[in-house]
Length: 189
Image (cartoon, rainbow, N blue to C red; front, side, top):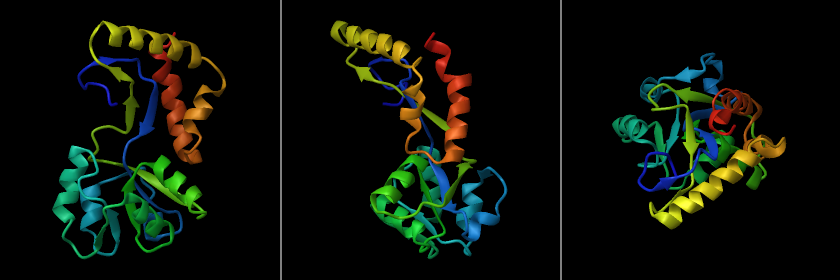
């Protein structure tokens, strides 16, 4: 659950990189040296074939995607799994996806993952916190307290972060490790 929805919420238990533009390290977009991409400008470029799943992203990203969904150089598929495979095999130049999902799909299908990801300028946030949620009643609040106690204890162990970062590529791991040490542990001490 993303923080802010209704109900009793735990402390942040995990975090993921938000949707990003993901492309092959050797593909057409590999010449881009910036860490952030303007999605609207990218999707307007007819020289790049993009892969999208409609209505799958955050509101801000969906707003951009909806402007370009009818263009011929934009490939639409209802299943993100198919788009990721197309990108990994060079049939589309980029997809909009979570890096962790791309890494898992590549592994699952035995495809070498040689991708790079770029933060999306229009995205609301670069890192999404994840929390547990329960009904906001006595039982739910007790469960959340138990979860928070476990989170505080477990977040201090050496393998806690490694487990959370297992499916990420090395570049993404660096970003998330930095976040973990600067931000995540603040409410876990």
